[in-house]
Length: 125
Image (cartoon, rainbow, N blue to C red):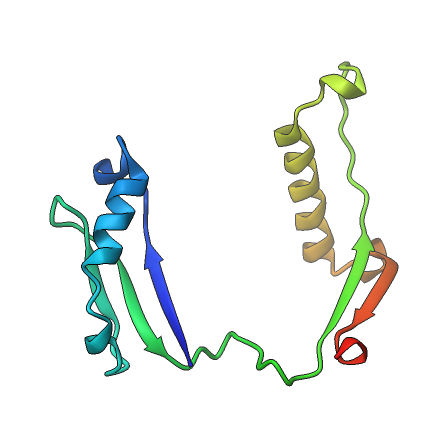
């Protein structure tokens, strides 16, 4: 069981002071009503629906007692540029990696991922 709150922050109500608007929205959540399992709309001060709050089971959440593994891997991308390495911006590296990962996914290139390490959560309990 979990409480999930989702708020879209990309409208005018969040432009000047997003933390104040978030606080205002959270203060207006009636937690008692959330126990019905339904999604309850969250509304900004302009009256726009900006999200929802819900208590219930989340099929995307792995239970704490489920076996879990973390795998660390690497994959290489390429940037063709006349810039020195230290002049390349993070956004450029991310763009290169997105392009590389798109190609890896399209061509189903599992061999593009190099295994580095793993971590067994069950062994740490």
